[in-house]
Image (cartoon, rainbow, N blue to C red):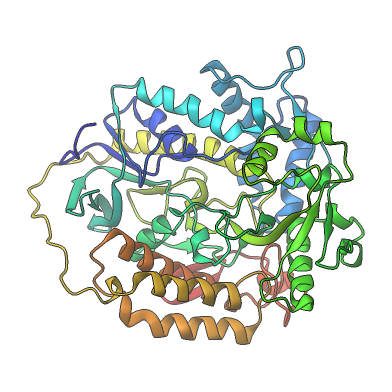
Length: 522
């Protein structure tokens, strides 16, 4: 693995689907450096993606389902772009070597939850995310113009004359580094670690959004955080995501008294939208008054052979923990899952700051509106990763070229208050956000969250380690979420307030935008 160069043409922060797809696009225009926070190989968890490769009716239904899930805030042009370009991106992956489940020649599409058509694309072993990553990684490694550096932690964006010109980093050995480039793409993923319970990996600490905001870029729709209703809840076991398909296949939700409860909350019962299910579970847990509350997902009434064949990956993981999901009920708990907001971009991934682009979960393209349509995330990463790469490539032809400069590497600060007691600091942020700015919100709770986070601000000066920077980024992301949520005095999509239980289209059928400490709606 080569070391960090002094300069390159393009820097991509993040080695997930969005980052690798953009890097492939950029490789035809110059040198591309992909910075991975940890190891890049096979880092994507099993997942699904959506695409409609059939007729116009299916495309219209996919668009309709996405718009409904977005609860009035999807940008129509962003959704249309996603769906129009999806077939080309999927066929491209197939041409690059992707092998998907087929019955004869057609690709396999399956329905999920209460959606109007069969839109979920499957791969062998129910792991489309892993298959996509393997295809993209092979393509990246075959390119002479793309270098991937692992365990490089990006800390700040460098800028001159209101344009991003480079990136500051901390190497895996802890030394400060800098690199000059013509443009930067943030594809660093989400911020699920902002909450005590999350399905996200430990690396999801909101780094891209925090770096962009500190550099002066606008962020948008930060109040919309999707909480997955059913994540595994077991001591010393990660919050493994249990697909909504388990419920759409007939799984039941039961409280600690073993009573089915979803019928009280929605006519579709277990097949209700995910945000409704998450709030119902939270209410059932509060009513139970248990010290460590949870509910059960029950598949024991389903055909065991079908369950094993339909969900081989999930079945195998649970067997490792001595749980047979065909015989045992599964303890589950809602968990933060997807950041809908992020760096505000146009349809080409351009942010409000020249030379800075964003794609994937770090970006707010407007595709998801107020709530993400299940399984659209991978597709967004593919489509908008490619679009961002093309836009960066085209801009490089017209305007700016990276120029190597002699830059003195800054010594790490020797007085970092947050470095003392980092884990306790992060725990305070996570507990505050889960309690006060989580699934169910009120004015009083969010004001409390802001008060607590602002009280922690003196401790986030001068970080000097990777973990300290993660703490700083989580703290800033928490403030952005809480302030945006407090300003949106309504309930819409993934944002639910008891004190404003309904939508207010007159005032808030708009996107929140934050720059500095002010929140505006546009």
